[in-house]
Length: 182
Image 1 (cartoon, one colour):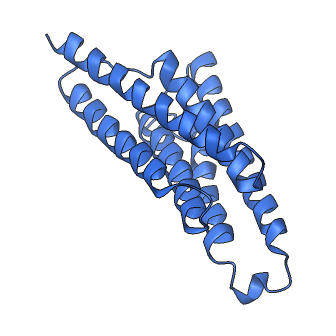
Image 2 (tube, one colour):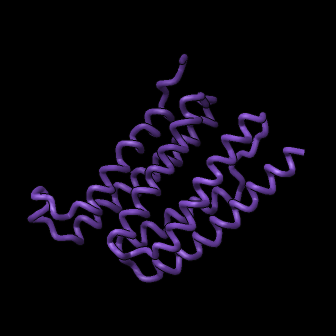
């Protein structure tokens, strides 16, 4: 795999490593390692890791496109890392009772369905790349996660806004698939 170990792929791999670390900070607060750390600091560290990982998501895509460093490995790693990061955050927040299980269920179901749809489309040679609304969805989800991690006001409102945009962007993907499959 020539060029597979480029900066965008390294950034995606770093995101893969940060996701479980953030998850541990959220759900394993009873570990002896964390005994002397106030839970609000664990929230802060989890939020910091989430923001750092989110920044790598922006830069890996930007660098890959700008410097023509798009690889097959990157096409696999990037969405996997994105899904791991949001999955870790949403499940951790749900386990801390900061996020509605229904909201998380709707978001994760959409993510799994659209991932399957994209794999099916790719197998048929149909391109259903990320839409503008898909990018908005990602940004709103990340903002909602940040607010919920830090327990800031309006976190749940942002979560439900993310649900609405997530479902709408899923509709757009389905419409694109159906239109391009004809």
